[in-house]
Figure (cartoon, rainbow, N blue to C red):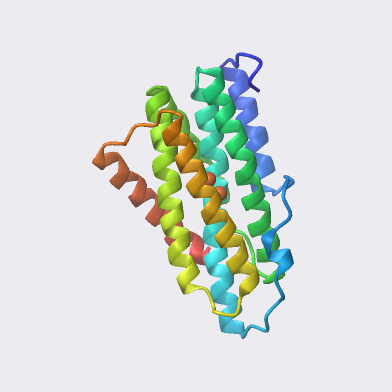
Length: 213
Ligand SMILES: [Fe+2]
Ligand SMILES: [Fe+2]
C-alpha cells in the first residue's frame, strides 16, 4: 500500500474489499486476546446482556477505526504518515478480533449497522485527510482520545466479575492512548472546537444505536 500511488478506481476497490473484510470479520489478530488469561465468570442473563451490549458498541467503534485509518491512509500524501496509519490500523484489527470473539462467547451479535458505521467513518477519515497531514493526524489523535474516554466509561459500567471483557477493554484503552500520543508526536494539530463537537455527536449516535442494534 505504501509503495504505489492509488488512483480513484484503486481507492474504490480497496474501500469495498476492506469494508467487506471488516464487516464480515474476515481478519486476523496479531496478538492473543487479553481475555484468554482470564477465567470465565458465571454471569446472570442480565449481566451477560449488559456486557454484550457494551462490547457491541466497542466493536462498532473498532469497525469505525478500521475505516477511519484506511480513509486517512488513502488521503495521506506523505509516505511516512501513510505507513503510520497502516501500522496503527493493524493494532485496531487486533481490537476488532478480540471484541468479536468475546461477543461470540457472550452469545450475542455484532452491530447490524456496521456497514453504515464503516462508510461514514471512511468518508470522515478521507475528507479530514484532504486537509493535510497535520489535520489528518490531529483528527486521529482526537478520535483516539474520545475512544479512550469512552472505554473508561464502559469499564465502570461492566459487571464487576466479567474479567474477560474487562481485560480486553483495558488493553484497548492502553493502545488507544498510545495511538493518540503517536499521532500528536508525528505532528497532529489540536482540532477546532466545532469539529471536536461534531465528532462527539457522530460518536453519540453510533454508541446509542450500536448498544441495541
Ligand atoms: Fe482500537
Ligand atoms: Fe486506536
